[in-house]
Length: 354
Image 1: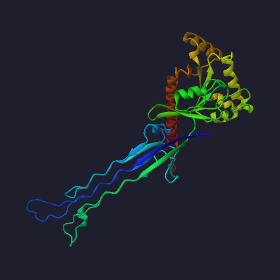
Image 2: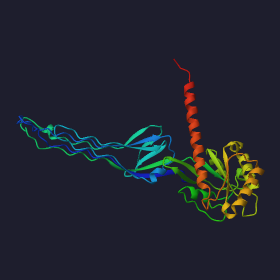
Image 3: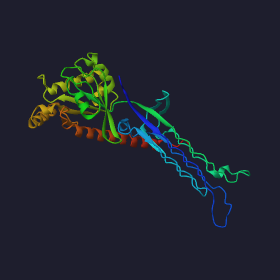
């Protein structure tokens, strides 16, 4: 099972600036002497752990990071300006590998943790450093040293934020293809998904979540039938469930009965799963007229007594999927905000030990 999000990036620190060969030349000062300044240090590249990120999806678009070069030294003993550092935000829990040496160079486990991954080059020395009693007019200086360059593999062990729930052929794999870069197998027969597929849904830069398409359930899954036991263990750790059902099952079945059958398996495996937030997605609406889909949707939620959010979508036609993903991201953001506020209040309530 591939439960890891990976990205490979190139980081290049800035070179140090070169030292300057210069001499003081001013009116009425015939023997000013050497005054070439040093070059500035090159900028370094750092990784910083950010608890507001939970995937590496942004590195799909930007893979190269280069810090600024140090400026060269100047006359009048003026030092070159140091190059600016580059700071790259990564999710908490990111493991950093050096690709060239195949070694782990760090594990970002704490919010705000900062790791140097490419050190900037040192600035060169100006000729003012080389004057002596025997060499009063040195014309030598040193160049800045090159900055470090590395290829890094970032590895994040994923925990799905959202789990897809439903019978085989409900359209889970098609949906995850529609909303992420994951490419699970899709076909018109059951159990095309034999192992969990994790996709990263990127709503906008720095706002994303992980969605899991896991083997479909069948009756008896809670007792070990089919592949459902693996699925049921995994969804215990998700924050939100999206329950997919065909709005008008192609096999002639009834959507309401299919939803209740899944609920029965959840109850048998762990009754607490029914208390987990669960939204209903009525899928494959592209196969029937829009007016009929709305009527069917109203009937289904009415018979189920459904009070949570529900949507009519088509994963294949990408109809309504963007709206659902935006609402999911908003829900997860709100949950994270409330958890952060609750943690802050808890700290404030701790009595003073003094």
